[in-house]
Image (cartoon, rainbow, N blue to C red; front, top):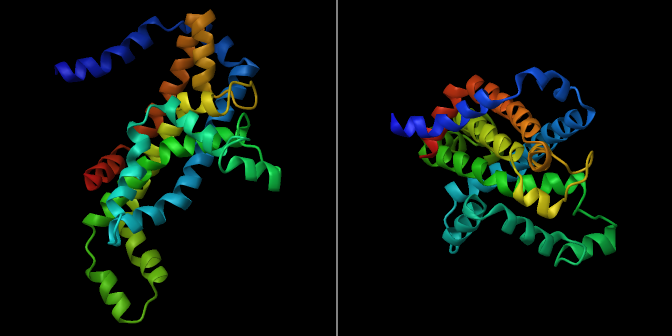
Length: 251
């Protein structure tokens, strides 16, 4: 009970101290709506990219054995413990206009990622994709492989086996990992502000808008925090059972 109280007390304090009377006017502000829209769009885009890149990576980590896989797994999980600001600096050094890869993106293709909306998506993908990979890898490791091996014996291709057998089996964990990934991307702050900056309408997501408001208008910051709290509660409560099953599989 003490642990529960510790976790729920800050949320209760947020609800108690929220300026409910002025909430409607604040949420109708165009800047707030723009920041919320940008947050939702970028978090969703980061989740889609994480699915495209993360599911094959999770399959490789779960099913293949080769020298260096332990090191690869460590690098995949590194963003989970890496301070987000450090992640943002690392992204700048890699993908900035003078970065080891970014200089070629800019010089050859004219692509600049820092301080753009695309940069927000990149930063959110970097910090959020490991949640998806870890969850899906755990599901793949715990899944029974008898049906897969039988299908291969009968002549099914690896892609067909994955699509018709493996994917339905890990679907709950895949959904759980996607929800965790999306929620982490939605709340991302440190890597985003370091790599993408704070430009209203372009890179100013909801967490950054809350941080700005807290410096000048704490009640407004509290009200804005309620918006993200409401979104998170709706998503997690709606998918609670699948999320718990997926997290259990990952463990």
